[in-house]
Image 1 (cartoon, rainbow, N blue to C red):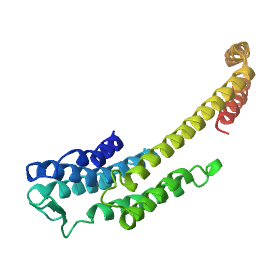
Image 2: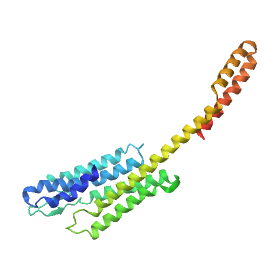
Image 3: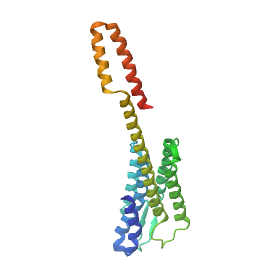
Image 4: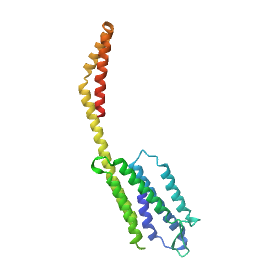
Length: 235
């Protein structure tokens, strides 16, 4: 949804006349673009590490959005002049710095968490980050005013596709682990037949009356046997 809104934010300004009456619309679209890019990177981090609360990152993304939407009354990041030209403020690069911080965190989390996984799947998130960085450089050096969709937006769409592939691989791996666990349970249950359990418990009950010491020994052996089978599920 965020990516779709970002594409709309890129395309829609060319459909709206650059007249002073539409200054608020262009301000909204510009602020939306600056707000969505860090938000999408935050979602990438949450996909890679779903157990993280990411509270500082969420606050940073929210502060970035508030900073750019303040352009209606406080031109500290950007503003549209009366002749409908985009003007930059002293904090115009806040989105860039927030995005670089989130991309660095994404790289760190991906390498730390998935470097030991088979297939080096952590390279997919890393490749997405590399594509985004390359797109930023292209926008600064080769992006033209008549370019409808920025290189950065295109790279985020590509990043979404790679993250879909990565999530699919993660799903397949988890499914394989579930199948392996189910297979181990079946093996254990084939070794521990119900009639064997019933017979053993019946024997222990009888020994409790006739030979309590022997019953204690049999109970210990039976406990060790069950523990070994349960431990085999974790290997």
